[in-house]
Amino acid sequence: GKKEPMSDLPPLAKKDTYKVGFAQVEANNPWRIAQTESMKAEAAKLGYQLVYTDAQSSAAKQVSDVNAMIAQGVDLIFLSPREEKPLIPAVRAAKDAGIPVVLLDRSVDLALAKPGVDYVTFIGSDFVMQGQRVGEWLAKNAKDKKKIIQLEGTAGSSPAMGRKKGFDDAVKAAGGFEIVASRSGDFSRDKGCQVAEALLKAHPGAQLIYAHNDEMAFGAIAALESVGKIPGKDVLVLSVDGGKEAVDAISRGKLAAAVECNPRFGPIAFETLKRYAAGDRVASWVKVTDKFFDASNAATEVAGAY
Ligand code: AHR
Image (cartoon, rainbow, N blue to C red; front, side, top):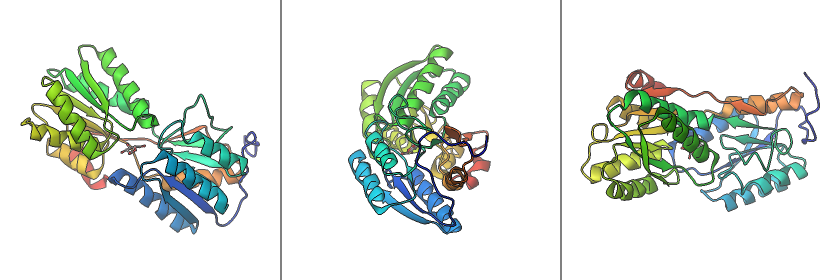
């Protein structure tokens, strides 16, 4: 019910304005840029001060970014932990300093740190479900193509683990598919391209590529073109994120499908902050809902994609 104390988490006073930290992972792809813009826009709309840091793809830098926010005395920290384990000490340090933490878009290892205990909540997508939706799409639509290359996201990150698990389970349940290789491309276009090229050489019979994000999917498309294969025809490429470039590529037949990972966190993030300050019950997982894009809706959805 209302006004129930939430375990021993640090409280957040009800105020007209807040100084809020946002510890971002990196700023080198459209998804991260869209997420940061959404957070900045909502903070500006509410008249809150946002202390933004960019960990530049380094968990170690992200730990020191959080520590700097603690030293500055922010009221609350929104954290997108690059990986599931290395950021846990930073989450605890904030709690010890009396600063509530809300995990945003990426989570931590649930066996080691818990919502409602170590941090307020996790706001984000169901990554297992995202992988499952891609696997189910394949089972329905990729009848003649069976050999799969998987490009995994950043090792140890919650989206990479969830997207792999949901997908692996779904294709196993569907039967007839074979994941011939599964390797990390670190969510990056360049690495995705390099890894896809190496894996296509080692497995020339692969007919499907599942990339854990758009960036690696575009890397894979470049790799296919460099080895003389036609994406969308010889090999179907599927991804997660569903940014504008991806939805446009689906409408042109280069990308087969993408499950959205909605980056528009600003409104839900600050709504959650206000609920917490008011003493309202905050769920242990505030789920973000995601669309699905394929040839059936890409042309109409492209305008609204980030
Ligand atoms: O945590 C979400 C993931 O992080 C996005 O899917 C990816 O593009 C980003 O790097």
